[in-house]
Image 1 (cartoon, one colour):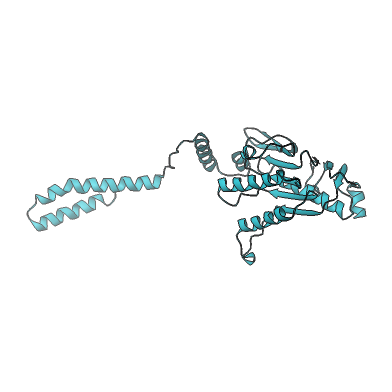
Image 2 (tube, rainbow, N blue to C red):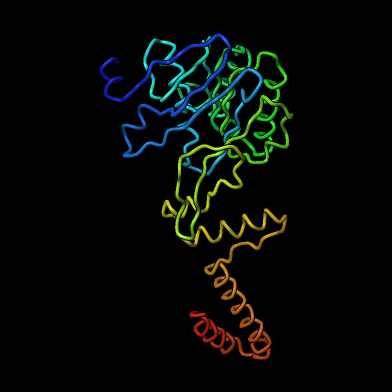
Length: 298
């Protein structure tokens, strides 16, 4: 670790008894090894201000990396390592909890959402004012309104307590601010992106505020999703945002089949009276065979 610390410009963290965080220019030590240019970000939190951070932003804008980055710096400092940052003033952490990675396996004998709930339940029961808790998109594994309600209730539970932990929450549930109590403990941050007609440009820089959109359509376009799918998705999204009904997607194959059935029905109706007027049974049968031959290509 000493050699890595020298090569990667890690610094010695400083601990304080005031239960405060101040990380300047923090980096994710694994992620920066995998990219050409890693964008460092700050993190500041105090007992009475900004102890709970709600982090929003577009898909793939850097939210999860940021949460892991703060947790890794905290863990490295606690075990006596230098840390990837320009400055690191940290409290002494007694516990660290996370809902970041969901283990989906038949061996767990629970659903992915139940696994998430178990992780959050553990942190709710045991976190103290000196604990660090990171929740990455908690609530996404169930119906939207119920997931939002669970997340908001969990955050409010901690905000009301004197033992509020250092809480980092990333979410795409952009309506959540209206369900949270107002307190100096709570701050909102977002990762800035630049949207052009052609693509989404990620700055990977965190700033104060709330994202206006997750930009799922723009991100999907950058990922190569076909325009046909994107256009339909945008149409449905716009209608839902306005509270309007939307037309079902036209099905050319189905419409052609219905048209063919109607044409056959009209043809049968047109010959029915003609067949009844023919008294000779053989002639009637011959006429019907000719009719069937005439409509086989309909």
